[in-house]
Image (cartoon, rainbow, N blue to C red; front, side):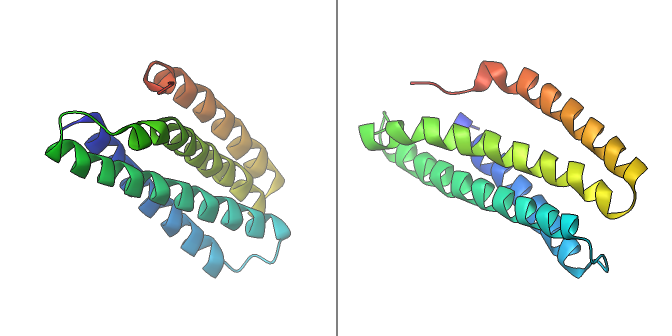
Length: 132
């Protein structure tokens, strides 16, 4: 698989996961405002991943027909990378604040876990961040 295929696949899986989390938050019985914020962040993450999925999928299609990526599509690679990372950050934040819907202790724990996850994601992804 090419890098674009991998990015399209991973983004599509993460988009589905973010939208599933969003749907779960929508039907939760919590009346706390933090649940609405968690749902909003999950929806924003899903949309970021959806855009990356579309951009990467069409980049794959173009690379199958040509040896090089056209300049217009090359210019999109940095914004797609940024959107991918933004989607991950938004997903982690939605997880982090989602714990507050249940209790203060769980909220603190999920914020801590989300921050550790963010550090881990940035550490793992750092070599793969596409910069022009």
